[in-house]
Length: 205
Image 1 (cartoon, rainbow, N blue to C red):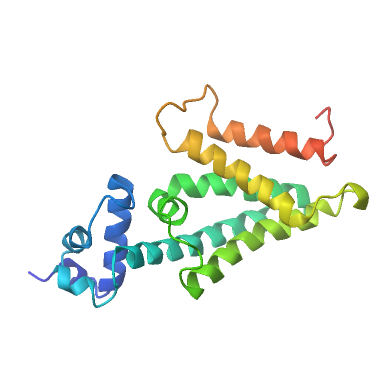
Image 2: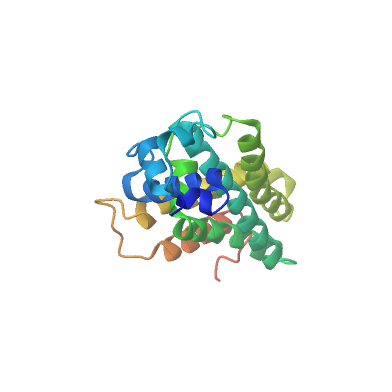
């Protein structure tokens, strides 16, 4: 019987998928390259033809995660058009949806300690993902009087931080951080309060 990784015809991707499964179960530092090789159905030596070490493997998982993340964010933004408000709110919700659907990628991206500047490819796709939210923030903030308008990068960073905080504290089953509210509700109301404060939503709505 042929090894599973070779049978699939793409050993590199088989190793990434094995790493994603291990990351979900054991965390980004809780597995070895040998375990990833075993999960992929190949010998440990085969791993080193594609990755120099575990961090390189996790970085590739993160890069692929950012590719998916950027596409998810772009889809949410496009779906919210032509309303700048709806597009912006949709990108916030997309963050939570991504974390729920792709936990292994999410951990590799945000909880592994891997820098987005580790490789040019990783940096580029991470920038593309951030760019979707920043563009949406820029378009929405254009509705605010210039003298009361925060920089678009700050605007988007606030929502990114809010979304990330809700995910980390309440959507990742972290011990001791249970909330009587669903993560979706926390995020929705948090974004609403922020946008009301900027005068982008009617205070009575």
